[in-house]
Length: 73
Image (tube, rainbow, N blue to C red; front, top):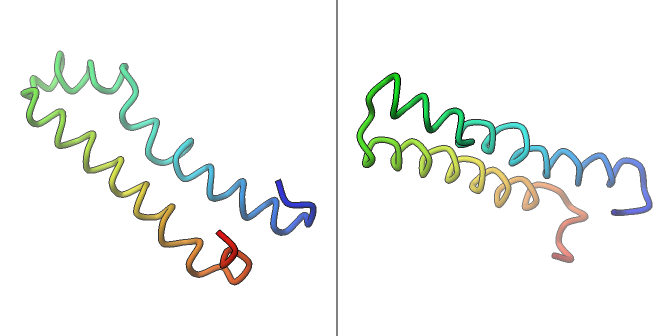
């Protein structure tokens, strides 16, 4: 983690994209709901997972480019 408090907050926020935005939408409880209650097919469930993972990963890739201190990565 960076020593600077503002930089630490930025890194934590970046990590939270996955932890709070993408991951909760693909956990087993949600996947079981999609399959067992909504009766989604395997292909539909896979499309759901791929959509939310891709959205989170895109945000993780985009945001550092907007942060001047991230040029070292």
